[in-house]
Image 1 (cartoon, rainbow, N blue to C red):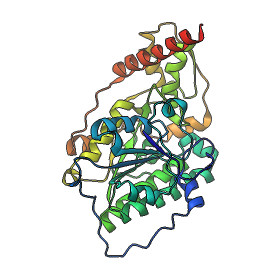
Image 2: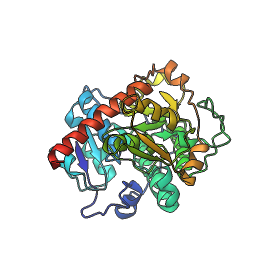
Image 3: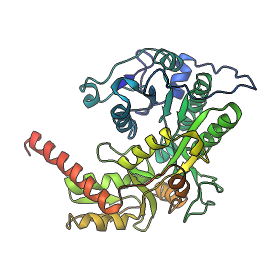
Length: 366
């Protein structure tokens, strides 16, 4: 994957990617858009495939989506960007190159037609640094919206279960209802949803958005989200047989395996505009509690020991979120259908983490 670093020597910020930080250093200077302007996605008549740029791409989802899109559209049609140095396994794969330029130049010079904006600080980390989360999640969004409108891009921005709050109907939570989140992460995502839909109606921007549930992936480390327990438990179960959960055992939340999440993202990006009855959709696959997850894992690892030490910050966040996502509109409009339920999720995660652990143990000689 092509990894874009915008400015030579630009230091990462708290280990998180951010176009907001970048904007303060290279000056994106949003341009005025005429009030009667109307923009549409770039035609792909010159090529069989879109040209895709992914921002904030070294996080949990960006690397996986890059692999999927490269398989679908070809290696040289997808550019992965981030402001931080790629990890060794990405760099050593010979798929990374640096481009010392700004966002507009990347879009123009590479004839970008789709822009996927993943830069964000997640829920728990955002609460620990609200000012930084505001800069990353909101200011960076404005820069991306301006560039997308100027160049007629198809723009995808993910949202989250965190875009809902304690006043939202929890079971099920529909696409359209009162939201009122109580985290800066959730507030920024509602802002992104509304700004994207406003730009769509005002300027014709081809904006598309999915509200992700908790995403579970074996090949990435937890990144500061409230649902991260459902990733960490597999690593700890395989390595030590002991796990400390920071949520109550009865905390039910919507979840999804990463393969389903990435496929849903590709499907909504490829969907014809005329089938989309809305621009922001819920998607989901399952809802479970920590205790239900533990019991399913114990079918494979019966000696797993789990203790519960509730983190009040994460628990308060989880208690304000949906219990079950209503994603019926995604299923009816563009045919969304998940492949992984809880049994399939657990089997796949244990196979992957167990295999990786055995490889590491063999290499280290333990």
